[in-house]
Length: 212
Image (cartoon, rainbow, N blue to C red; front, top):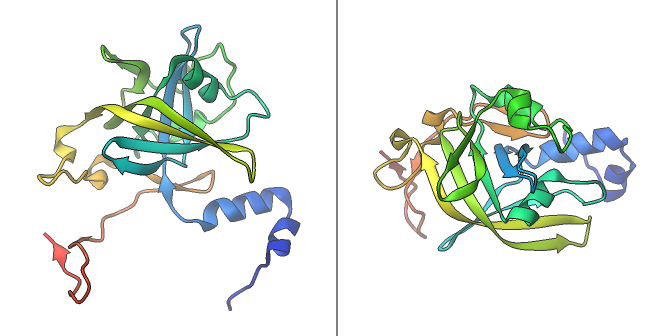
């Protein structure tokens, strides 16, 4: 039996029930660890499930930052340094990634606290997660306030990619399932997605065709 919820019904829900209801009803999302470093040189790691593709030329990604009503180490580090990394969470590290969402102090490194390791390159100052098979180095491009709820949409330009060669198909497609990349629903439910099939580019009048 299908249930109907009005806006008033949603707003009348108990706070944490509404949080979980709305966080999971939008479906599966990507799950990535975002690496930064503070102005004091302390590495920081945060778990984000709002990362979205914006464009490929130039390569841009964005994510939602919660309201700045309390200190946000990730935001302040990005503003101070101008760089951050995105690291795909996999089946082997998802529990450590989840723990990284805890509220550690500004002088404590989440890398050390959860047992993950920093990785740096000569061309990007923010720390990567060594254990992740897909790592992106980004430079801050823009930020846009979302007036409806006080959040911020942060846009970064990809200036560096570190990826296991075996995960790249001949046509440039990234084989996420081979990297055991996980997805998340809500704040605490992790999933191991599987590929159903790749489908040929859709055109009016054509039949759907699977790609090999």
